[in-house]
Image (cartoon, rainbow, N blue to C red; front, top):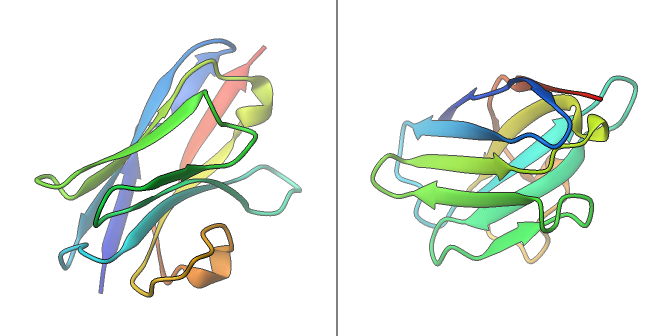
Length: 125
């Protein structure tokens, strides 16, 4: 079992920055894929970014490419999402997710078997 705890959400003005953290516990993450998803009110859960723990390959959705960066700290067993140039449309609950099974696809949320509780990010205009 993997436990995930997010932190770092909050209220920020458009153009500002936030860094989300996702602390993992329960087991080592070698071979895992870690991801961030977000869900705005009335919308479906949306893939934001992912990182393969072994090797560090990263992926980002087109909507955040160039503004958001996902990274990991092997020692702290933590994944980060650095969010810059935030826009009001980035407002959502951001959730961290993990999966142990390798797949060439990254974005389907159904492939992830561990989830954090989510953290609210609100961007004011």
